[in-house]
Length: 241
Image (cartoon, rainbow, N blue to C red; front, side):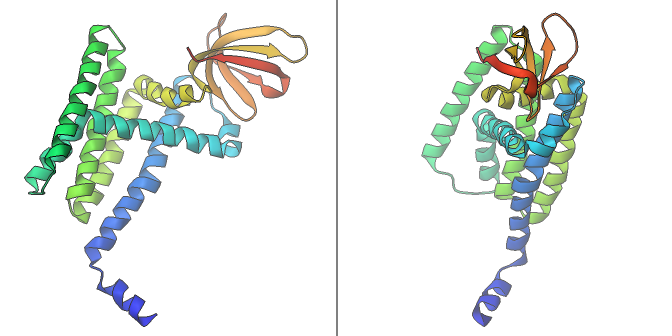
């Protein structure tokens, strides 16, 4: 036991602080930032699901992880050379195969983005995602190459930037959240047809969210978001195409 305590004490403080910054980034920053974006998604469409946050904890975490994973992968796909450049500046040895793979992966990704621009895609959403990815890749670079003090400064900066961007461009932020919801067929403006359990009447619309107790959707004949109690639903069909 004494040997273990001695070994722990021998670990430099820098290591402990860097470890803490990694933990905060992974288990505090990511879920809380994603939750804020999810609340903005609800605010954008003028509804709030109490039961989703109180009873749908597993689903909520799953959507959060999906959205965070999308942003992380997108950041690496679009801006991975940034990590190599920062590593070079910090005089770190980088494998040549990794450099070639990073450049190839990035060229393919940017080719797809350029085709999206040419095809008149949602450019506002693309620019928003690019901005988010730029902030995220900067923080990843700091986590990898810089000391603990810089990492904690970066934590504050990335939190401010993402929250600021999400509130100021709420429509684009909502579309990012839609990606996670669409992946599981539970929201994101997918087409839905609801059949009433008693009357058999069908109601069509655009799905915003399926919570443990309600279906939130925009009816095809009306504006605004309506809620449909799942206890009154015979069955529903979501079209993911």
